[in-house]
Amino acid sequence: MRITTGPDGRKIIYNETPTQLARRTSGQLVPIPDAQLVPLIERHSQLQNLDPRLVRAVIQAESGYNQRALSNKGAIGLMQLMPGTANQLRVDPWNAEENLRGGTTYLRQLLDRFQGRLEWAVAAYNAGPGAVERHRGIPPYRETKEYVRRVLSLYQGDAARSLPRVTTASPGGTRIIATAPVAAPPPVDIRRKTRIIRDSDNRIVVTTALE
Image 1 (spheres, one colour):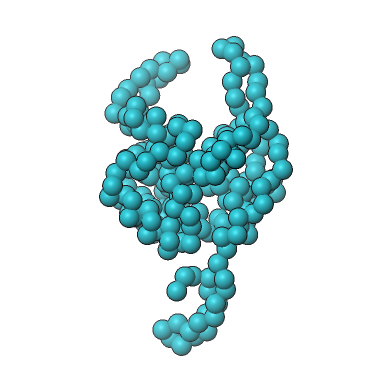
Image 2 (tube, rainbow, N blue to C red):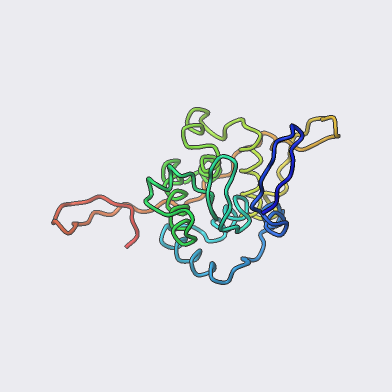
């Protein structure tokens, strides 16, 4: 943990090491730093029918694999779950495995909600599904546009990294603020097939859960 003073004189507390910061801001998918996380990421990705590389991209962009990460908005852990989301998913966000279970479940829910549109689901992970629905796509927020670009770049590699960006002049020079409007990539077909089963009470249930 380190403490600095902001330009307005307020104290700012960081619980992110320089190494974690470097991982979080890297332009390439980095190796998983903790070997114990590897099988957890693989298992929960498989349970939710997600590509583990996509889950790694979200983790890297969110926390840089910092299990104790706490954002200024209150998001917690590896996949930066908000307390309300963690409560809804009934997970302890401070526990690494439960955080991964909650984060992958939430990402799966978003992909299903937006019918497999990966860029919309990633935007919703950052800005909330309501914002994506209101704007019928990626919201025009600088943070969200850059977040989607970063996650897709980490996940898809060079193809996404080549997306153009728009810039704006600032007192300190030119800085990147968002991705330029581009045609949306084709939806990634990661939807589940619907199945009809009987539950323990012999009731008929329509489900998309994995067997």
